[in-house]
Image (cartoon, rainbow, N blue to C red; front, side):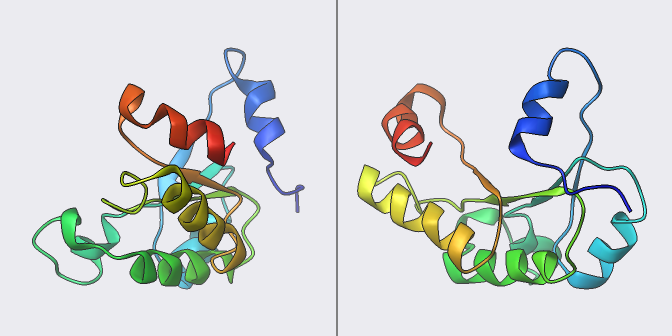
Amino acid sequence: MSKTVTVQDIINKKGKEKITMVTSYDFTMTRIIDKTDIDIILVGDSAGVVMAGGKNTLSVTMDQMIYHTMCVTNAEPRALVVGDMPFMSYQASVEQAVRNAGRFLQEGHAQAVKLEGGKRVIKQVKAIV
């Protein structure tokens, strides 16, 4: 089996090779994905809709996202695992963003996090990185 994909591997591919990513929310799907050459597995906040039947992603909680991230990382995939920070888990403050990003790494065992918001959340991104 090939080595685990790292953030540095993704950086090295940028602009030179295709970078592939797929979404997974659970152990079984991740084991199937792991038979491919996918670079990144995103544990998306869409888990709240797809797995829990929610009406949208706005009500997804940190605990739900940590749970699904842990389910994915328990499969020990080769791909880099990225946890999707849910709505209002990072917008309120830099401290909140750092604390919740840390939860993804510590509790969910993700290697990276994804957040949305562009220039509005630049302070949060800089603090997390």
